[in-house]
Length: 227
Length: 307
Image (tube, rainbow over all chains, first blue to last red; front, side, top):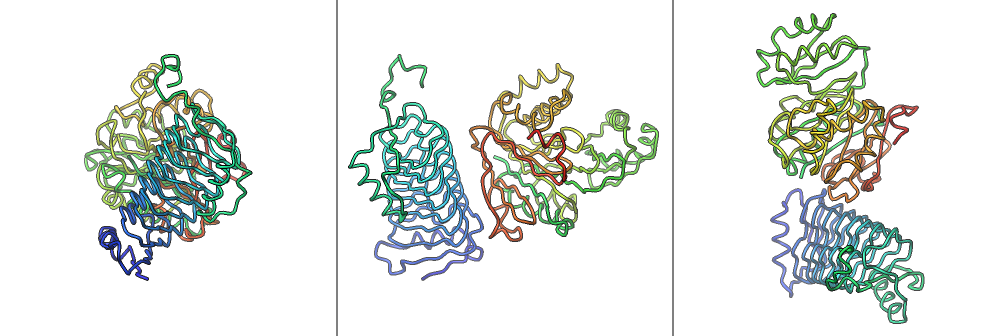
């Protein structure tokens, strides 16, 4: 286990150390102490390593992540896991706005609540939130899955494409062109796998599926009022 | 982008450290606003007189003999304590309109007015502004601070936050208002005094105008959600506490922390990390389009009830 004290090492030097880890590195376990809400912690990683941040983080922690597992033992600031490509991010506390924005792959798990715009423009990432999510979540979501064990705020899935949303609690309102959908066997299996991967114990049959009504895909003058 | 910090103390033993804690929080937010900085601090005392904080770019000449001039205008004794470009005036209750008129003729600007509020703000890095007024040495019950990255208008002292909205009330803002020009014209027609091209000053004047027309602060903040177009996280200071409201989209960040000792506000969690007991504090983000208040008053005043 390599331990980095961020208050002594500094952000750039720390991220440089983590970036220097190759696919074949033997130093696979890293711990970062004294994060104190700093921005861009463990951003741009691309190696099969596990980084544990002991405390709360600021903007863009684990942004653009590939392969790595990043654990945040605290709460995470805005834009955490933005554009994640692969790997896994686990947040023990709450996540601020636009978690996993534009994420292409990998998984993000939030043990607390996620704020507004969770999974905005998601393009393949899987996000599992144990608590609630805020308004405008998964806006323009194109692909991937957003699982919410609590409630969702206003305008869920506004203008979404083929991203899937599973919500166990209530949805305050659905966004334009987002609708409730039938929960088929394949969705129950998919959801069970996502919950297992996230390490969250919940019964898939209690969830409701939402997705695109596919009426705003292409411009249609009759829909002009909805754009 | 701007930075906001706020600290409301529940534990009286922390009151001598309010300035020190708030100054550290303010300096942490330098990245979010290096252009100018300001702080509103509530000393908690009330001696039956009125306090005014005033500012001049030429304090040596402007403040010379000012007590005598103002005593004549106020029809009673006026005392003054100078702090760099600012001076804190202690004037007889009920004389503020006469004092203000006298200050206007001398080109001295009024930063704040009230029983316990003092506002200090200047252009420059938060660290330098804090040093200039020795903010760290101040004590008080609660206070709010702001670091500005200017977008809507020039970097000037009068464009710095906080803005005084009424007796013992002030406003700081992170965001930008897009309908401030039309609203400024409307408010000026209504007789409101608006000095600069700054968007937040219009927001402050809007709240003042609403309250002059009978609205409580809570009602004024609630109606701001309908009448102000743009992005905002507002923190307002009142004699007994502070309030928070974010626009319905809530793009501008806000984090709050509460323990048995305090309620704290920060644009980012970074601003809160050195507060005592933060590890075990309840930390959360205020909801959009929701008015929050924290108050020292045991029985909430009409203003706070409205929220």
